[in-house]
Structure formats: C-alpha cells, structure tokens
Image 1 (cartoon, rainbow, N blue to C red):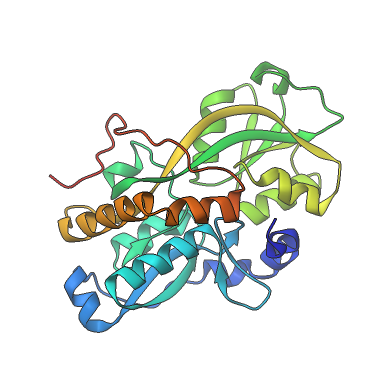
Image 2 (cartoon, rainbow, N blue to C red):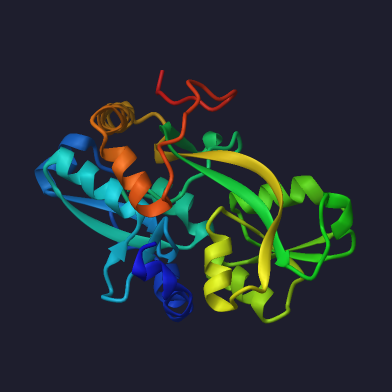
Amino acid sequence: MHNNRRNFLGLALATVAFATVGAATASAASVEEIKAKGTLVVGIQGDNAPWGFVNTSGVQDGFDADVANLFAKELGVKVQFQPLAVANRIPALTTGKVDILFATMAMTEERAKSIQYSKPYAANTISLYAAKSDTVTKPEDIAGWEIGVPKSSSQDKAVTDAVGSTATVRRFDDDAATIQALISGQVKAVGGNQFYGQRLDAASAGTYERKINFLTTYNGVGTRLGEKDWNEAVNAFIDKIKSNGELAAITKKWMAIDLPQFPESIPNIPFTVN
C-alpha cells in the first residue's frame, strides 16, 4: 500500500480547513481557451485517500490526481488542483471556480441534472463500517443507531435509502470528519467507501470492520451541462487510457485491484452531450 495512505488520517484532519476554502475565482472556459491559457484548474478531494488527498509533502496526490495529471498532459497544459469538500464540488464547477471535476464523483441521477458526466473511469463500493464487537448482518440490525456519512455524498444517499427511518443519519462535512466521528464515539457506525477500512485500521488497528455492502457506484469526470467540447475531450481521453493500459496501472497502484468492468450505459445518466 502507498505509504501516504498509512499516515493519512492525521494529516487529513489537519488540512480540513484548507480543503474547504473556496476555490480561486475563475470563469467558465472552453477547452481551446484553457489550452491557450496553459493551466487547467481541477476540482479534487483533498481529504479522501486514496482518491484525492494532500500528501506529507503538501502535494495533491492520489488516484484522481494521477488521472487528472494525465488529462492535463493530454491537453498540453499545467494542472492547478483545487481541493474541495464533498458538498462544494458541484457548486465550484457550475460557478466556474474550477474547469473540471476529478473528485470521486459517483454517478447519480440527481447529480446528472446539475453536471455532465463522462464515461465511468472508476468504481466504488459503499458499505457500513462499525466495531467488530457489534453484530450486524442486515440493515434491520442497526435500528436506532446513529450513522455518520459525509453530507451530499454517495454514502449519504446509500445509507439514507437503506435505513429509512429506522436509524438516524448524521451528516458531516467530509470523509475525515465522518471517520473521526466514529473513532470518537459520536456515531455508532459510518457509511464509507471501499477504503474506509484501511483508514479506520490505521487509526485504531483491529477495532472496526466492514459489515454490510450497500451498493457499487461508478465515478465519472464532471463537466458543465451542455459543454460538448469538454465532454468529448474527456471521453476521448478515458477511451485512450483504458486502451493503452494507463488507467489499469493507476488502478493497480492505488487500489491494488484490476481495472473493473464498466457499464456501457447507466439509466438516466448520459455519458455524452447530445
């Protein structure tokens, strides 16, 4: 596993304020305008290893950072990363504060009303994590619990849909705050992505485990609605790195798995601009 992941939790908690600061002002620009400008502003997560995080050298790192760096190279421009909290990702894009999102954007129908998704380039399993000492095998076992999730995240939707009114969903600003809520006893469990187990074990070895898998989601690159040039450029890039092995190599590096099989389509979530 990447060394930065092992030591990430403490660093993430120290950099939450940085991750939630508003992005530098920018205007919505076309692909050709960005090429002429020479810099691509990428919205990314700053607190969610191994997807996107600031490493011990203060540099943006992770799966999404590697893919975004390749995309900037494809365009022939430099990349400027803007770390974003979960709830700030779409507003930062739609207001033009970032040019594009490589930000662990799970593909949902609701989000597809606000942003344009690319073809999927990553997969993510959303699960319930709790103490090993708690016996849980099905959603009914967590009736009455308080469960932490990052607000406006795919975990938020998955857990809310699964538990209904039988448990209380508590929403936190980001993944680091959600994990800390479990460790500190503010909540009984958390809804997390497939890497929460590693982060929880790094914080308290042998204490927590994955209990229930809720669903598998797919991540897409986010661009603004109707911007065909961006959508076509990103989809062509994804096709390229899938075919030449670069995406598989990044997936193996950060996730220690083979490249997943991606769906050709997802109902009500278009991958292209008509």
